[in-house]
Length: 91
Length: 417
Image 1 (cartoon, each protein chain N blue to C red):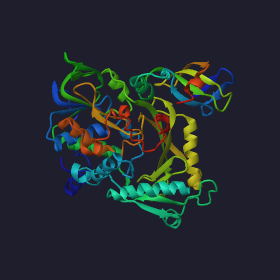
Image 2: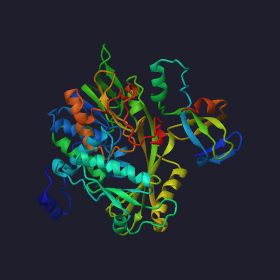
Image 3: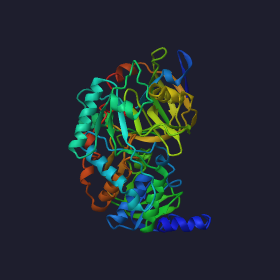
Image 4: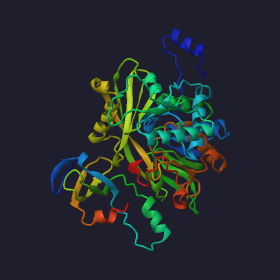
């Protein structure tokens, strides 16, 4: 698997770290137990095209949003994920 | 048929041309008391325990490919019960005891080899953690020995003891741990279950659930027609989320790929199963001579049953750090299995929130060693509608209750287990 970073160009997988499904969003303070439980534990675990957060730690250190097929590892889109790092840092 | 020295001799004298099929390849009937989805080790073990231990013989095991074609054929064959947390300790020891009598129980040679499992430690903190785990095991009646450097040197003189960064200081040894032949485990359970009337149905993929007016699961839709069931058990590790989604469930599970490797055959070298505690690397030598080894998962969701290069490199580096001389051994093959990574690293055995459906999922890295224990406790749940006492902590709602079993202590991120 190679990833085309929008800032650095095509790089090998070892430079990147996957943070998982981009869909769950951290619930606001005061959210119900159900919402927190859902965010922390439950996953769609999609078989097919999935939107994910990746971190380019071995390169530009940007957070990326990558659309990848979990059945084939084929990557169809890579875009910068503005603000994702801040939102996900607490995970 | 019953295997014995006489059946072996008879087959040998007739040129091995008259061996009978070891199990029946059945066609689906309209209805069963219990339908088990998944013809891997866990599904087949469950069927055998249902028939032999709980007297339920109208049982079908449905497998989408051929039996043993999923994770049962994609592991590193290690068996052990060196766990330290309540919930795990008793369960894995139950499983270990079942491994020890499996060949007699099944009348099948599953090549259980109690060659010992040693976890090496490389720091004082790690020694203390292993000492504590060993003590926990011994308190629970499980064998464990803490070895110092001299004892490890005597047992495995070929290790790199001059590693400046990760010096081997000793290890935690479970002598009763070891390996078993993974394919034979599948065939053995199929052989024994089939003899008790269990139908093993291959090339039969489940495509949906049949539900009654109250939402209760009353059967499954498959590529070979609709099959009615009193109860449906899921044992489809790797695909648990996909099958559960057909019943409208979301699980605390992500699917990740874990790679394993086999080298070309070499003369007997490694006497036991070894884990390199400083990194994540485990190795044993197969009876054919190949080194069988693995390490971490690849770190991203996957259903692809194949891995990628960075982890391959990482695993081989782990092996080289421990035994630099294997650098000249060629890698023969590599494969990837899909792991049900649960959010605390421990399995889920429970009734599903949907009536009539039962879950056996979330085995993470460690499904193979659990095979007989998993079969027994899952059969118990299906037969009695209550959890076996050794599986009482594996409930699905433990995440909501905050009663997680986090053996590795790395939190709710499955790519870290």
